[in-house]
Amino acid sequence: MPGRPSSPLTEHPLTERPDSAVMSHPGADRVKDVARLAGRSARSKRGAFLAEGPQAVREALRRHRAGTPTVDQVFATDEALTRHPELAEPADGVILRRVTPDVLAAMSDTVTPQGVVAVCRMVDVTLDDVLAASPRLVAVLCQVRDPGNAGTILRAADSAGADAVILTHGSVDLYNPKAVRSTVGSLFHLPVVLGVPFTDLAGRLRDAGVAVLAADGYGTADLDALQDASAARRLGRAVSSMEPAAGEDPGPRLENPTAWLFGNEAHGLAEDERAAADARVRVPVYGAAESLNVGTAATVCLYASARAQRR
Image 1 (cartoon, rainbow, N blue to C red):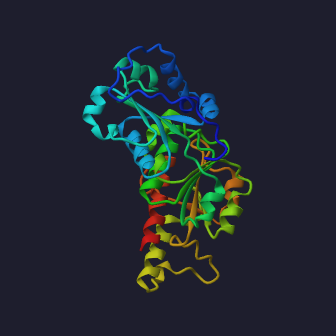
Image 2: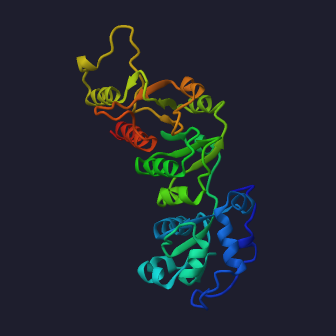
Image 3: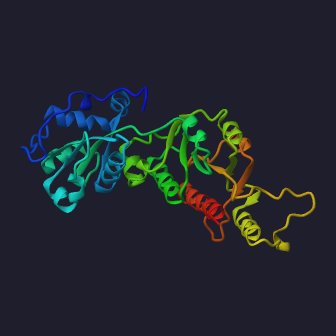
């Protein structure tokens, strides 16, 4: 991405062949250099982050081979390469290094490493990039701070065919190793925008023709009712129980381009975030649970829009 600092890990690429000597010293400077990318300051300085596990590395390599430079180096144990031989397939500009389990463990951020770690270039884009592509479905994470929740929402957005994911200022660093792992490779599938000030975000989305819906447990619009109304329009008939009373707001149309706002785990959406939305939509809870986890609520809302838009 233009403007990103180049990574010291790629400024002086080494030329060892993949079948050269196995890296076996966990205390080596090169090993420490990779491990430092678990920290935010090192990631920011180098413009690089770690992808751990075969699925994440596989998707990063797939993106790289498709023409978007993404991966600089891959470190893998012989066992991992035997189980996942596709990780050793050639990719232009990518250095593959064989390492012992001890070295892999020293590089990894997990208690039980999965045998492969990749050093990747940051993949986020600008808000202008996303809006210029005329998105139809966008997930907006408003001060979502748990890396597991952030990764889950991104994975749900990917599965629902969303066009982008936006994280507002105050949200978790999506390049946090736990967040990267929880996306299970989806980080490499769709555009992601980081650190956006919320102040004028809703206005910019609307100017791009995208309605803004707030997922709010106390919202006045009911997601089930919106889905029913969308289905009735699709079938070309009015259903009396779905028709709004005279003068009543019919509510948003799920089949239209939509950005969903999802709030902080502990406090939900802030008042200014709710106020900026075109409508506040609740996911009905039919059992005794007080509410839904933000990742679960996001999945339900995104799939509701995806189904309406694809019909």
